[in-house]
Image 1 (cartoon, rainbow, N blue to C red):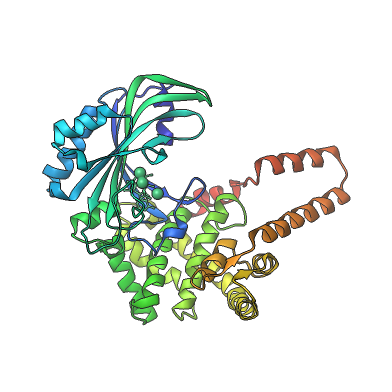
Image 2: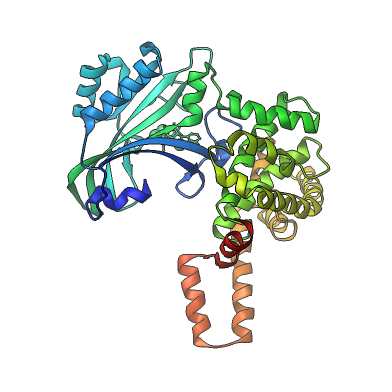
Length: 427
Ligand code: ATP
Ligand code: MG
Ligand code: MG
Ligand code: MG
């Protein structure tokens, strides 16, 4: 909804006051990071498609709930007994509309007293209570209702989040009512597809199934047991990587480029686990373009470019991946406890190109953690070394200012080359 932020606060107007959207979403870093969940849950991806409906000072709570219920029950014909909703614990208004419109009993309207049901973009900006809709996939699947301690299971899956945008947070202590109350909702296409295809797991819906079957044909290992996990990660990361590259992001060691590189290297490691000796990811791309290229023509347009980047990154990382894995195996065999020294994780990062979350992911199945404090100290030392050699070579005041800014704000990335390349050569 970032693109609509100023419309919600009234600073900007549009020549429409309702909108529906389908947005490409990526949750692999920052406030929302689902990278760790991929493969482990039935419902999380790094890249997914989020459907939404918006009102800018037009309809509000009652009509939003009416539309949501109508779509789920009438248009999608979902059985009412399968649905539960949550509201923010002080939002009696929303609870009363769920009763009135959907005739839901109190036991199906769950009041939540935490930020899961209060949406804000950051410390300041438009915000408001939310109401989420959950689908019950049945008692064969572990998991509890929202608000219970078992809620992290996959039985009750959140399919839709409605934000009632009614406040603006001006600073830590001041929250005002918005002059025009608005609606912002998000529904995960893959989750609603699973429901409508009578499937529990997103990874078994049509789009994923085909990618996984295609991968199985190439790799020639059955998608069962541990291998199944790798197939899911590969399918997810293929989508994320392809869409990011088609949007002009290149794998690099900083900023957005590093988010992409981390995703790509995880999938490359899973390809390796499945026994792939040749680069795999670029061979899966034609299938993805086949499945999604008509909805996303940018995938088709940049297919050759994406293919090239996927292959190059895999070729490059393969050189150090196996050596790094060998080193890690040796270190793990010599451990006296279940903590890998930070220095080893740093060596893997620095010499073998293992992002820290990749090492964490590899060790997770062995219940081994990393001494992150020692790892971070090594990273800090490296930054200081770079700083000293820079200052040593040129002792100007400007450099000092540059380093101070970099330390305060972190790395930024120059996008000129890749974007121009994309416009000039590829598109
Ligand atoms: P969850 O609690 O299951 O992690 P969420 O509350 O973090 O979901 P929202 O931020 O409310 O999700 O996003 C709106 C909708 O987008 C969700 O209701 C869900 O349908 C979908 N969604 C969110 N995260 C993912 C994801 N990682 N993969 C697929 N769909 C997602
Ligand atoms: Mg989440
Ligand atoms: Mg949630
Ligand atoms: Mg939510």
